Image 1 (cartoon, rainbow, N blue to C red):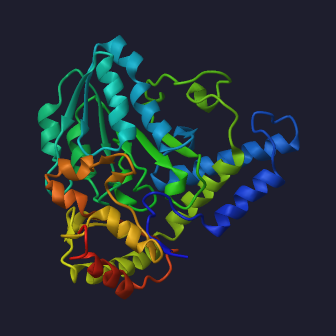
Image 2: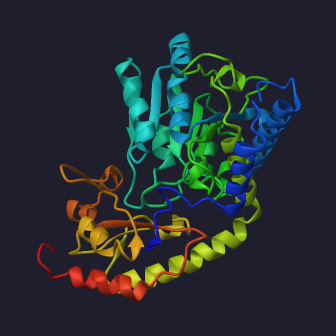
Length: 381
C-alpha cells in the first residue's frame, strides 16, 4: 500500500475513536431525545460529554456547541443563518477573503444574489490576508466577517489574533472556518471575540459525517442565526434531526485526544516535514505559502517542469498525494488559492500538496525524488 500523504483531505481515524463509535453503534444505541429509559439517558449523557470535550479545545461553553454534519454545513449555517438578521437590521455588508474554501465562498455568492454586498479581501504572496485591509473595509453596516484559521491548500495559519484586536471594537459577527486547524493550532481559536467556529470530525482523526458550529454567546444569547432546516427543534432549534450519537461520541474523543497529545503530535509532524523539505528541495521545489506561518502537518510546493497530474499518477504506488488543481478526464480547474496569492499558471499547474499526521508511516523519500526526477525531460513534461 502507498503511504498516505493527504491528511488535509481526511485523516485516518484514531483506533480509540473507532472503538467508541463502534460501541455506540452496536451496544449503547439509544436516542438522546428519548431519556425515558436507560438507553436514552446514557445516549444523552454521551452527547453532553462530547460537547464538553469539544468546547474545551477552544475555551468555549458546552452549550455553545451545535452539532452538524461537518464544517460545510457549519459554514452554511453561520453565513446563511444570518440572512434574516441582516434584513431586520439593515446591515447588509459582508467581508471574506479570496482564499476561503468553497464552502464559504459559495454561500457568500448566495448572499450576493439576495442583495447583500460582498467584499472579497485579497491576500499576499505569503498566503495570508492583511488584517488592515479588513479594518479599512469595516463599515457600520458590516454584518459578518468570515475568515479561515488555516488554509486547506497551503497549511498557512492566518493572522487571527491581529484581526481579533481589530474587531474588538466592532459589532460585526466573526465567523472562523477552523476545519483545518481545530485541534492542531490551539492558540489562535481561544480568543473570545470569535462568534462562530466551524469544525469537522474527519480532519482530526474522528469519523466522517459529523462536525460542529461553536456559537459563542454575547451575554445570554447565541448569535442571531436562523436554522437551515426544520423539524424536531434539536440543537437549540438550530439543527433539526436525530443526533448521531456514535459520530458525536467519536468527535468528542477525537477532540480530547487532539488536546491531550498536541505536543507529541506536533513533534512527529515536524520530523516528517523536515524530511519532506530536505527531499523536495533537492528537486528545486518552491514552497507556496510562508514557511514561518505554515503548520507542521502540511507542505505545498511547485516542482518546475513536472505537471502535478503526472506526478500524482507516477507516485500512486509509493505515496497518496494531492494537487491544488482539480484534474479529471474532462476538466481542469486551477487552484483559486494559489492564483489569489499571485502564483503564475505554470507554478499552479506544477503544485503538489503533501499533508501527514502522527499516524503516518515512514516515507521512502529517495524513491519519491527518484520518480519525480525521472518525469523531468520525459515526454509530456
